[in-house]
Image (cartoon, rainbow, N blue to C red; front, side, top):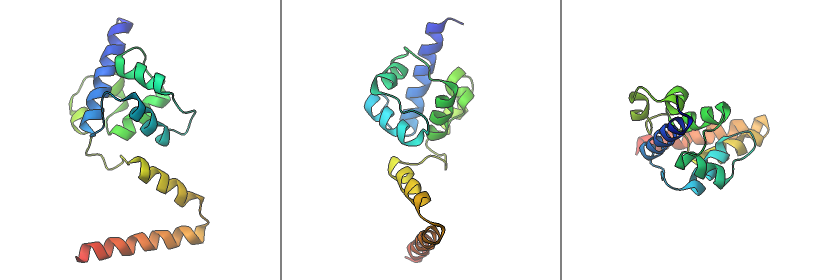
Length: 133
């Protein structure tokens, strides 16, 4: 397949997945920021995110996996296209977190085991109280 067509196809699917997940599909700054809080490797630049959005580049497989998990689509669909059902599922995936959630989970992991248990119990208590309303 023509590399230009592959990059453009990836760009279209990425934009669709971003829109379905209620993110801006034309903001490389937001894409880079949201991606970087989820990716454990070296952060991407806004310039790299722009290249993904305009079809000038396709991310590595490792980055594709992070994008797909974040946006609730399959890695295969994001990279190669095909079944539109995967894109329709974006925005409904329970594994997708907001950046503040990711930061909170990171903070929770930094606590010692005792304080992690206290934090979890506190959250469970708040959930129970919210259900009773």
